[in-house]
Length: 249
Image (cartoon, rainbow, N blue to C red; front, side, top):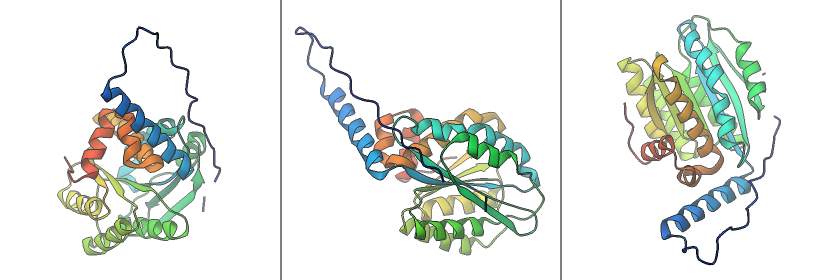
């Protein structure tokens, strides 16, 4: 096995600078403020989120691994001012090798773990990743699982069973698929559906989009849908849409 918890306070409210002649805030502005306040309160009450970042580290994945090393900071940055995020790295490679790190709460620690791992040839072991998530959340709640990969070489029924159990435990799986392998796409969409998560496609030309979506997952892991609604970025709205029943390619 490869937890440091860092607590960050929500920014203090600043005094209103309205003048006697200023108009009253519109209802939409008030609604937005209330949503944000509730989201921050939810994050504070929860004490932060726990997220598993799982990657296929077989030989074909080296370019994507390098991208993930660069983009993982987006997750911590997304919640740095409103809560804390603990991330665990899980990966598989080679002949039956599947490992997990401790939960870490800063990008430097996670990057050190990731840069020390090289990709090796081998078959996919997604079932082990899902089984690990089930075992972890039985000990202490896991708020989300992110999986990044391009292939699936296992029993779909077995993966579906584990994904369904994660869904019942409130652990959504956010699957990011590189490429257009139809077998993988079908399985990944089913994992996302049964776990009440979401599926997305990306490639080397859409790294910026992947970074934004990873930040949305982090916000969700620390504050749920309310936190996504409060932040209100395009990627947050897309995440909410997919969580409510629409996986788009």
